[in-house]
Length: 243
Image (cartoon, rainbow, N blue to C red):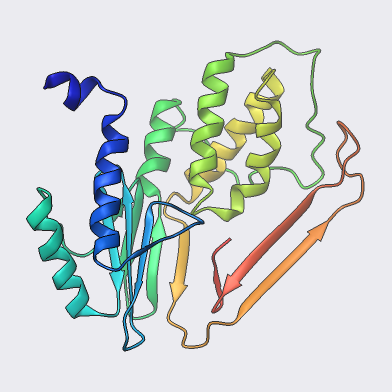
């Protein structure tokens, strides 16, 4: 019994399989883009979404009746607790106002600064110089590879609500196989930038028109490492940044 609960690798798969069956039996469709997302359209044109991560769930809907029925059905099959309105999920803090919904990762930023000993560091207004020349600096000393990869991984996750660091994180992630002192200094500059505005995040404003806008750009052979072009894009839905 203990092995089945805590030691068996198949346990998470079995749990998710049972949850999937329960959702499909309620008329929900499993998303092909993200298998942890379940979608249901009602005959009245309303929508209910359920997103699950391990044993944490988010329900978003404009159909209050369906939400109540779903909650009752799930409680009957699984031991569950309703935590109310979404405020915190996987490190992402959620707050509400008349303007819309604001998400940030303030706690993750503070924890990262404490973990790296940068909580009392100086601050900077930019995460990287505009004309930076960061390359494979084989002449400088190496740094702890595991620690460097861990820091880059945490910064990649922070970029979900901090698109202002997306580019520089993509730069430092190019050197995870052989990090040097110069690359660690670039990460420290990102941390100094985050220290200046740990509460910055994304605001999703209320907007009745869901117009999609996509902007893209690329330099030409801009990389000083392999002379490849660097491209970037951003997608707005209803005036809100989503990708």
